[in-house]
Length: 334
Image (spheres, helix red, strand yellow):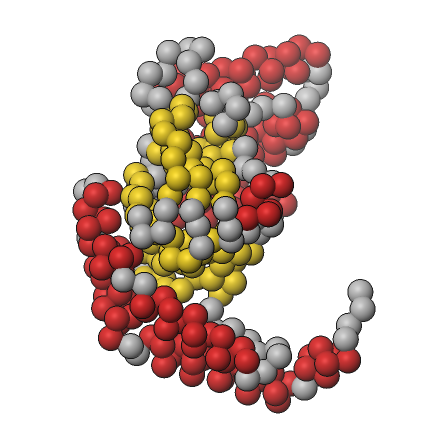
């Protein structure tokens, strides 16, 4: 990696770096004090504290900020001014970058947030998305620069008959500047297909994930689910902690895993069961048998029974199986 002399000088000048951070925070503070932004922050906090019942009410609560873009223009002008003062100025807003979408997180209040996103027209043409993630909560989208955008609206299919696709294309249309679109993210999602020019999207989002909520990713071509995750923050963090704790001490971890096999969230129950099988092998059978017989989730009962069958095969083939020799088995269990 080659580093320019100007960048090297900046990176080595800690005093200058700290000074720019202070200047960046002052810039953000100045913008956040504007009356329109204070009011927007209050509205986002209120929506987080008392979520609306539907996406139409969510959109109605934010229509003033989605319709009048002057506050967005003020933000961009302020950012460009600050960047112009120094080649390596530290922006006081968090960047969010992918190959197609580049943006900044503007405001975060509880479970509500506001972002500005640049849709790269060339990158979108070269790297179209083939997956959609249905999560929780509501979105409100509006074009505040460039456009239009060709979009596809996909909805979940309520008919779960085996063989049916789980998501279907409901509408294909151009989203034009000045137009807004609200989404109930648990049941519908928008796919960006084509942009006639680089486009700036304003996005308001509210997460309403309760215990047991799910985030599911679907393949557009087949309409089938690819993977499922947790839609509520608390359970997602617990699952992440379990992954980190996988190499922990048995004396501390096993009691926790035993308790979590009775957790109200089915993903967390099953992940805990898998880890018990990996660590204790056949010693996990009593808990596994109980789960296979009585768990309230049909999918959990089904995969638990598959695991019972695998354990039985292992026991027949290796009757001397040690208690801690279940790791290879767990790798074969969904």
